Length: 167
Ligand SMILES: [Zn+2]
Image (cartoon, rainbow, N blue to C red; front, top):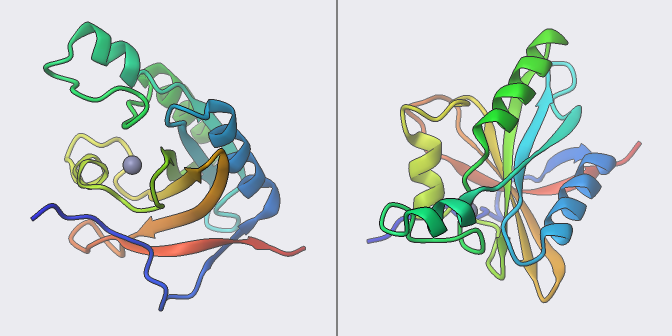
């Protein structure tokens, strides 16, 4: 059975600064037909401080090697390594760290797919402690935002909806 993790409506929503939610939504809307991806950096005091966009190079990988990369950027994302490494270095120089990784789903709900879970749980994933945010787009608008986190590397991911933190 294919496994996936959906937003659990019985869990309380996660609050995030409104400007970060707007930046997540506008990145997803600008990319429109392809999945967008990027990082959020922060610290324990302010977990969601700054958003860093990364390039999704899945379409280029798919075109070069469709056997290895059967999906293109409309259905999957592959974060450009230079983009995320630079973001990580810049965050560390400021005393921050990568607290969340985000991507969008074009025409799908805000859930972690089998592929998303494999990526998040694989041993080479660069940010094992990070949360995952999925922005779902339907009919050209943002329909749902979900945040997926786990208590430790042996735990399973749980999904909660994302709401704006009012000032
Ligand atoms: Zn996904």
